[in-house]
Length: 436
Figure 1 (tube, rainbow, N blue to C red):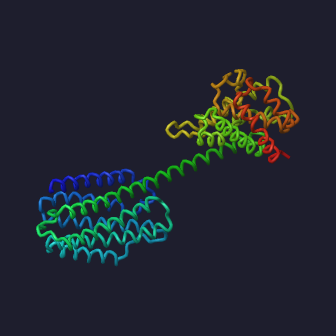
Figure 2: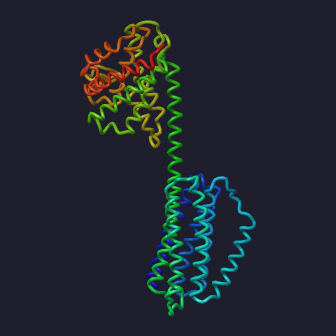
Figure 3: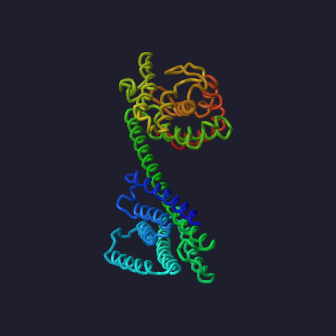
């Protein structure tokens, strides 16, 4: 039995110390806990308690008292930690709490140090159960404002721990073991309950660690989304400042791209390239397809009439320029944004043609990125059905016929098929967001 005890408590020490070191190595990233010391303190006290229990297996009264005291302090810190999770609760510990802690500590040392083995079990269970009840009370208050799954799991674990402690006392009272001369010299039932109760404490610490990791992940994800959103807004503003297209053009083309992508997926075409996140990134990237126009002179970009051959060659450079601009914005390969990677494909490839006669690279077929092939059709339709300086607007029917005529030439045949199925939607969006 001593060997089993030693193995268990040393293993518990390793686990808890690992959680402690893991937290301390990332403490600067845990924004919620920078000013709250209860969690690292809890882990430290509980890991040292496990180590002391390991040494107490050799019937050392000093380590037995020390281990139970450290466990008692660790449970106190956990209760204070859960209290710190409650909103609008002061994090300052009042002098009354410090005074109560000092009194309880003195009482514990006196009672535990001079009691017989059976009484020590009662005393330890009473202290730990008391703090468990406090923890449960704080967590129930936290649950009213925090629906995290980890909170519910902690409530269940601590409830189980209270039940186990109560069961331990009932077993000790109803079926006393006359041979308990030392804490670890107990029957199989008492031993099992004690180990299960200790496992509950370890499991609680693991759940709390997961809670903080989950919080950290959400913080990073929120920060990443905020950075991505800010960058996209800035790039969109830059594109709009130099382009003569309207905001409605962006709304329309985003809607067209999303519907074409979803239709292709429903048709079972390019499914691997059209996951929900791929489609989301594609839609976000759509407004940046013409960002390269920031490098086109106003005399060409804003010309009121058709471009001549020389001017057209300059205008055609906007695809490569857009790709360069977006590559520069996405230069940090360690923090590369998927939406910018998609935007690079769209900006650099939306004027490529299925038959290889497009620009800037003359790519053909599926060597053209799918997002660019979808954007190409959406952009063409929008350009046809809206008036431009160099052309009158076309009817919806004429635009559909023109796109169908270029199936397999300018456009991916599969994308054209998806477009044909979505013609009513395109007409609806074109009318809803028509330019004045």
